[in-house]
Length: 199
Image (cartoon, rainbow, N blue to C red; front, side, top):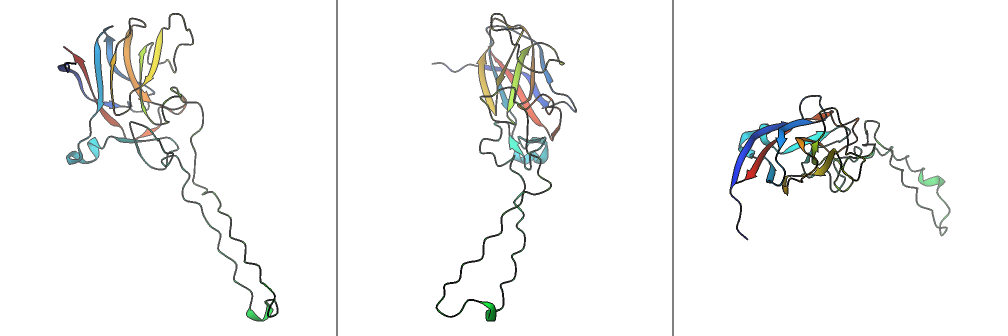
Protein backbone atom coordinates (compact mmCIF):
# COMPACT_ATOMS: atom_id res chain seq x y z
CA UNK A 1 0.00 0.00 0.00
CA UNK A 2 1.31 3.45 -0.89
CA UNK A 3 1.97 5.69 2.07
CA UNK A 4 0.02 8.97 2.04
CA UNK A 5 1.61 12.35 1.62
CA UNK A 6 0.64 14.52 4.59
CA UNK A 7 -0.14 18.22 4.64
CA UNK A 8 -0.01 19.86 8.06
CA UNK A 9 -3.20 21.75 8.93
CA UNK A 10 -2.51 22.59 12.58
CA UNK A 11 0.89 23.00 14.18
CA UNK A 12 1.44 22.52 17.91
CA UNK A 13 -2.09 23.01 19.17
CA UNK A 14 -2.05 23.20 22.99
CA UNK A 15 -4.43 20.67 24.54
CA UNK A 16 -6.29 21.31 26.72
CA UNK A 17 -7.07 24.98 26.49
CA UNK A 18 -6.69 26.59 29.92
CA UNK A 19 -9.67 25.66 32.12
CA UNK A 20 -11.65 24.28 29.14
CA UNK A 21 -12.90 20.75 28.56
CA UNK A 22 -12.31 20.79 24.82
CA UNK A 23 -9.73 22.46 22.58
CA UNK A 24 -11.11 23.44 19.18
CA UNK A 25 -8.73 21.83 16.67
CA UNK A 26 -10.51 22.46 13.35
CA UNK A 27 -13.70 24.45 12.76
CA UNK A 28 -14.77 22.16 9.92
CA UNK A 29 -13.53 18.66 9.24
CA UNK A 30 -14.14 17.26 5.75
CA UNK A 31 -15.88 13.89 5.56
CA UNK A 32 -14.05 10.99 3.88
CA UNK A 33 -10.64 12.67 4.37
CA UNK A 34 -7.78 10.63 5.75
CA UNK A 35 -6.44 12.47 8.81
CA UNK A 36 -3.51 12.05 11.17
CA UNK A 37 -3.19 13.48 14.67
CA UNK A 38 0.07 13.09 16.58
CA UNK A 39 1.57 14.44 19.77
CA UNK A 40 4.74 16.51 19.48
CA UNK A 41 7.54 15.07 21.62
CA UNK A 42 10.90 16.83 21.47
CA UNK A 43 13.15 16.28 24.52
CA UNK A 44 15.51 19.00 23.29
CA UNK A 45 12.77 21.57 23.94
CA UNK A 46 12.41 20.66 27.61
CA UNK A 47 9.04 21.14 29.32
CA UNK A 48 7.47 22.68 26.22
CA UNK A 49 7.24 19.33 24.42
CA UNK A 50 7.41 16.44 26.89
CA UNK A 51 4.30 14.79 25.48
CA UNK A 52 2.88 14.35 28.99
CA UNK A 53 0.21 15.92 31.15
CA UNK A 54 -1.23 15.30 34.62
CA UNK A 55 -5.03 14.95 34.77
CA UNK A 56 -6.85 15.75 38.00
CA UNK A 57 -6.19 13.22 40.74
CA UNK A 58 -3.09 11.76 39.06
CA UNK A 59 0.01 11.63 41.23
CA UNK A 60 2.38 11.60 38.25
CA UNK A 61 2.19 12.58 34.57
CA UNK A 62 1.12 10.22 31.79
CA UNK A 63 1.48 10.31 28.03
CA UNK A 64 -1.39 10.90 25.62
CA UNK A 65 -1.90 7.13 25.63
CA UNK A 66 -3.26 7.51 29.17
CA UNK A 67 -2.53 5.62 32.35
CA UNK A 68 -2.35 2.05 30.98
CA UNK A 69 -0.86 0.43 34.06
CA UNK A 70 -2.56 2.56 36.72
CA UNK A 71 0.64 3.93 38.22
CA UNK A 72 -0.13 7.59 37.48
CA UNK A 73 -3.43 7.33 39.35
CA UNK A 74 -2.13 5.27 42.25
CA UNK A 75 -2.37 6.86 45.64
CA UNK A 76 0.92 8.04 47.04
CA UNK A 77 3.05 5.30 48.52
CA UNK A 78 1.35 3.72 51.52
CA UNK A 79 2.32 5.12 54.88
CA UNK A 80 3.46 2.36 57.24
CA UNK A 81 2.90 3.03 60.94
CA UNK A 82 6.03 2.51 63.04
CA UNK A 83 6.50 -0.99 64.37
CA UNK A 84 6.07 -1.42 68.08
CA UNK A 85 9.26 -2.08 70.00
CA UNK A 86 9.69 -5.78 70.75
CA UNK A 87 9.13 -6.75 74.37
CA UNK A 88 12.20 -7.14 76.56
CA UNK A 89 13.83 -10.57 76.33
CA UNK A 90 12.86 -11.37 79.92
CA UNK A 91 9.15 -11.29 79.02
CA UNK A 92 9.44 -13.68 76.07
CA UNK A 93 8.08 -17.20 76.31
CA UNK A 94 10.10 -19.78 78.28
CA UNK A 95 12.79 -21.74 76.47
CA UNK A 96 11.45 -24.35 74.08
CA UNK A 97 8.07 -22.63 73.61
CA UNK A 98 7.68 -21.17 70.09
CA UNK A 99 7.22 -17.43 69.91
CA UNK A 100 4.62 -16.09 67.47
CA UNK A 101 6.01 -13.44 65.09
CA UNK A 102 4.88 -9.88 65.53
CA UNK A 103 2.07 -8.93 63.11
CA UNK A 104 3.15 -6.75 60.21
CA UNK A 105 1.93 -3.18 60.31
CA UNK A 106 -0.91 -2.65 57.85
CA UNK A 107 -0.30 0.04 55.23
CA UNK A 108 -2.49 3.10 55.55
CA UNK A 109 -3.45 5.09 52.45
CA UNK A 110 -1.72 8.40 52.16
CA UNK A 111 -3.96 11.29 53.23
CA UNK A 112 -2.91 13.24 50.10
CA UNK A 113 -4.11 10.58 47.64
CA UNK A 114 -7.06 11.61 45.47
CA UNK A 115 -7.90 8.71 43.17
CA UNK A 116 -9.70 9.52 39.92
CA UNK A 117 -13.45 9.01 39.95
CA UNK A 118 -16.36 9.16 37.51
CA UNK A 119 -16.95 7.66 34.08
CA UNK A 120 -14.55 8.32 31.23
CA UNK A 121 -15.94 9.51 27.89
CA UNK A 122 -14.20 6.72 25.95
CA UNK A 123 -14.44 3.54 28.05
CA UNK A 124 -12.14 1.59 25.70
CA UNK A 125 -9.21 3.96 26.35
CA UNK A 126 -7.35 4.52 29.63
CA UNK A 127 -8.10 7.49 31.82
CA UNK A 128 -5.82 10.37 30.81
CA UNK A 129 -5.63 9.48 27.10
CA UNK A 130 -5.99 12.11 24.37
CA UNK A 131 -9.44 11.87 22.80
CA UNK A 132 -11.24 13.58 19.93
CA UNK A 133 -14.82 14.58 19.25
CA UNK A 134 -16.36 15.31 15.85
CA UNK A 135 -19.49 17.45 15.89
CA UNK A 136 -21.26 19.37 18.59
CA UNK A 137 -19.95 22.44 20.35
CA UNK A 138 -17.46 23.48 23.01
CA UNK A 139 -20.23 22.98 25.58
CA UNK A 140 -21.00 19.34 24.69
CA UNK A 141 -19.54 16.92 27.17
CA UNK A 142 -19.93 13.46 25.69
CA UNK A 143 -20.96 11.37 22.73
CA UNK A 144 -24.45 11.68 21.30
CA UNK A 145 -26.73 9.01 22.77
CA UNK A 146 -28.60 8.72 19.45
CA UNK A 147 -27.48 5.54 17.67
CA UNK A 148 -29.20 6.15 14.33
CA UNK A 149 -27.76 9.50 13.25
CA UNK A 150 -25.43 10.87 15.92
CA UNK A 151 -24.76 14.62 16.04
CA UNK A 152 -21.33 13.97 17.57
CA UNK A 153 -18.93 11.08 18.16
CA UNK A 154 -16.05 10.66 20.60
CA UNK A 155 -13.03 8.40 20.04
CA UNK A 156 -9.48 7.78 21.32
CA UNK A 157 -6.42 9.39 19.72
CA UNK A 158 -3.51 8.61 22.06
CA UNK A 159 0.00 9.62 20.96
CA UNK A 160 -0.86 9.03 17.29
CA UNK A 161 -3.96 8.19 15.29
CA UNK A 162 -4.76 7.92 11.59
CA UNK A 163 -8.46 7.84 10.74
CA UNK A 164 -10.94 8.48 7.96
CA UNK A 165 -13.47 11.21 8.76
CA UNK A 166 -16.97 9.66 8.76
CA UNK A 167 -19.78 10.95 6.54
CA UNK A 168 -21.81 11.79 9.64
CA UNK A 169 -21.66 13.58 11.95
CA UNK A 170 -20.21 16.70 10.39
CA UNK A 171 -18.83 19.73 12.16
CA UNK A 172 -15.80 20.73 14.16
CA UNK A 173 -12.96 18.63 15.55
CA UNK A 174 -12.27 18.98 19.28
CA UNK A 175 -9.53 17.42 21.42
CA UNK A 176 -9.50 16.73 25.15
CA UNK A 177 -8.48 14.33 27.92
CA UNK A 178 -10.32 11.06 28.53
CA UNK A 179 -11.88 11.57 31.92
CA UNK A 180 -15.21 12.26 33.56
CA UNK A 181 -16.59 15.52 32.03
CA UNK A 182 -16.52 17.23 35.43
CA UNK A 183 -12.74 16.70 35.59
CA UNK A 184 -11.65 17.31 31.97
CA UNK A 185 -10.75 20.98 32.40
CA UNK A 186 -8.51 20.36 35.41
CA UNK A 187 -5.23 19.19 33.86
CA UNK A 188 -1.74 20.23 34.94
CA UNK A 189 0.46 20.89 31.95
CA UNK A 190 -0.53 20.34 28.34
CA UNK A 191 0.48 18.44 25.26
CA UNK A 192 1.20 19.85 21.81
CA UNK A 193 -0.59 18.27 18.84
CA UNK A 194 -0.02 18.40 15.08
CA UNK A 195 -2.91 17.64 12.73
CA UNK A 196 -2.49 16.52 9.11
CA UNK A 197 -4.65 15.52 6.17
CA UNK A 198 -3.64 13.22 3.34
CA UNK A 199 -3.28 14.86 -0.10
